[in-house]
Length: 234
Image 1 (spheres, helix red, strand yellow):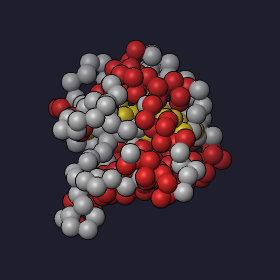
Image 2 (cartoon, helix red, strand yellow):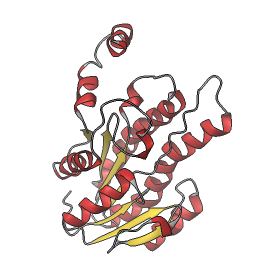
Image 3 (cartoon, one colour):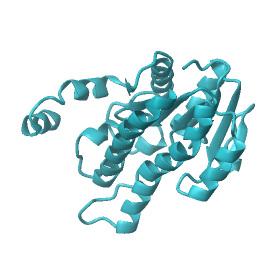
């Protein structure tokens, strides 16, 4: 999938990783960018079509797909991290994370799959997280939602292969955005992450590891869980 001359829809495009996707897509020559967020007025990038979109609203997602019939790349970036605890956390908060992080990209994928097929197959890039691979106190609900998003990436890839759609997952550890602002740990710059993601998409990758920590985690996934968690704790 080549970025130059493509038509891209980016969810959660108003800040952080989403805004960086928009910037780099423009640099790489995308012909048109639909930049979406719940509040279209929060999108400040020039030269894009700002669209109000709540990915948890199936009707709104379908309406956008009926309008944006020229899309060739869908980037599912919209997400929330609310710090809910699976045992003691508020159930409505847990449901919100699942609705946004898992059902959101499922909604957009279902709506845009026919659009991509009509335009030659195209590609879908799901912004995931390495926390899909392990549990961390303080982010257990978020981890569950990202594990579900990882699984939907695998499932939709298998289903959409017949129409020639490349479905890729971008996995990462901490990125230097507002979402990770309160965490005292090494972070990757959004510019570096997005460049890696777009390079991977153009190379035909289906799993893109966005930073060194994620590469390290992936390298140890073959270990027994007890051994792997002891390593993480260390």
